[in-house]
Length: 232
Image 1 (tube, rainbow, N blue to C red):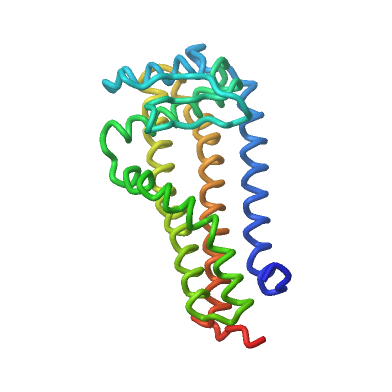
Image 2 (image 1 turned 90 degrees about the vertical axis):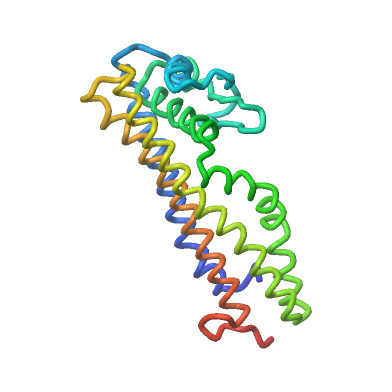
């Protein structure tokens, strides 16, 4: 399977899209990391203000390591910001920080797509780890049931990628709304901060497209679409 030319035909468009999305994020973040926010608040301060303004007092804002490793951990109720976001007062920093705070607000409001995504995490971790092995074994030993199980396992990973899209879009929408309302950025700065958030969303969109292409390959090789069932 790993040397199947057809596999790379499905894989390459997704890799190109993911690479372009990642490059856009880095370029956009770098560009607006040089622009100071209207309020002068750091990412950590902006996230704190957004949380408190919405009645969320039980979420810790912490610094973590890595570049753009920012995330909200619902199990620990911790909002973790990378060094370039936590202590910076740039438009990029406050935009990313408020996006992560948006996830905390989703958690507090029991936002349904976030609950579904969180519930799928352990299942997705398992399916992503074993889908290729099960599918490859099915092809190798010509066991059609194993091939179908591999398809089903990867379908879970694709479902996770799809559910992630509204979760990320909604978190960014909450951030954009709060950035101006709380006086963190000026109205004319909001579109600039929004570009950082939009660029980041494209990485999730690219991930969903890549996941779809891989699933289509699985289905093609299983003979469920396009008559691509292996006969070797």
